[in-house]
Image 1 (cartoon, rainbow, N blue to C red):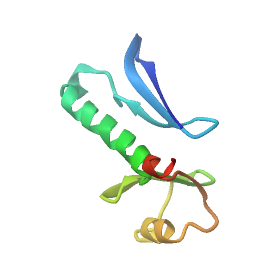
Image 2 (image 1 turned 60 degrees about the vertical axis):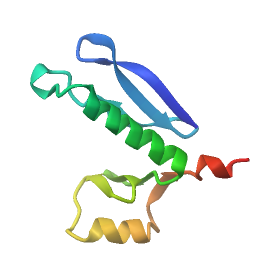
Image 3 (image 1 turned 30 degrees about the vertical axis):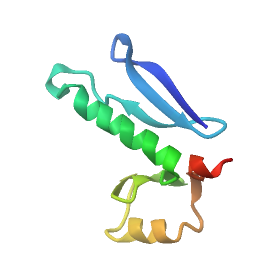
Length: 113
């Protein structure tokens, strides 16, 4: 499942979007990252990121791998983001073989007849 909700950005309620997946839902994206004028490049970048997240979930390419305080998030085959301490080639190795990591992912929605 995917949950899309309005959320606050700074002191402005309902200015952002929060996306969660799974049951129970786990937050996978908050848009925009920042609400300050200096970071505001218009809606095109935010809409592209929203599309990337939703398409990743419904196409089945989304993966969230967690081990302790380390986390790898992949929305599509084009790249990933990670938080925590990693060696240079470790992320690619974990994505190829995630044994020992907790994984949040799902089948493409088209396969859920």
